Amino acid sequence: MRGILLAMKNKSYDTAADAIAFAREQGAVKNDATVLVGGFGLCGIPEHLIAALRDSGATGLTCVSNNAGVDDFGLGLLLQTRQIKKMVSSYVGENSVFEKQFLDGDLEVEFNPQGTLAERCRAGGAGIPVFLTATGVGTQVAEGKPAREVEWKGTTRTYIEETGIWGDLALVKAWKADEAGNLIYRKTARNFNPMMATAARVTIAEVEEIVPAGTLDPDQVHTPGCFVDAIVKTVCEKRIEQRTVRG
Image 1 (tube, rainbow, N blue to C red):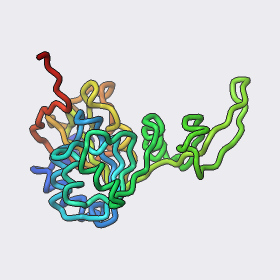
Image 2: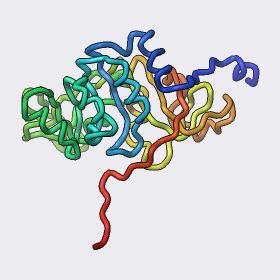
Image 3: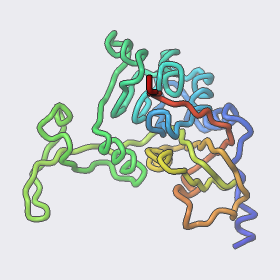
Image 4: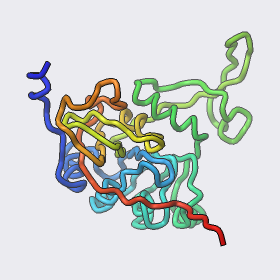
C-alpha cells in the first residue's frame, strides 16, 4: 500500500491561476461553461479560484451556487464583469449587482428550494438524472415539471420531477487536503462543497493546508481524491457577511 501511495499523482498547483489554467487545458474553463461553486453566504467559498476564473475571461457562464456572493466578493466579482449569464441558486439576497442585472433582464435566474438544490448536485455526482420530491408541489417551483402520484409509507402524495446537475467545472473550498486530492472540510464550511465536488467533469479544490499522501485518516476524508483533479493552497479572507453590533 505504501508503494501505491508514493506513486500517486501530486495534484497540487502553486496558484489559483495555475489551477484554472489546468482546467482550461482540460476544456472545463470556456465560454458558456456550467460551473458549480461551493459555499453558503461567504462561508466555505473558493474565493481565490473565483477571482482566477474571473481573470480567465470566460463569459456566458451558468453558475450553480447557493447564492451569488456579495457585491465585491465571491461570485459578485463575476457579476461585476458580466461573465455570468445564468444563476442556479436558492438565495441571492445580499447582492445589489445581482438584483439590478436580474431586474434589467440581463441575468437569467433559476431559483431552487435549498434542499432541492443540494440534492440536484448530489444526484448529478451519483449519476442520477431524475428524482422525485414533494418540495415545491403546488407552488411556482412545480410549474412546467412532470408530476406523479406515488404511494410511499402508506400515504399517496404528489411529487415533482427534478433533474440532477452536472457541470463542466466545480470550484470547492476545503480545510485540508493531501497531495492526492483527498479533502476534509471544516464545520459549517462543508455546506454545499461535498456534493458539488462530485458533480463536474473537472473539480478544483482551494484548501488551507496540503499534507503528503497517506497522512490523512481515511475515516476522516469527506471527499475522496478520485473526484478531485487539482488542489491549491491559499490564505482565505475571513469576511463577515452581516455585522450586527450593539449601539
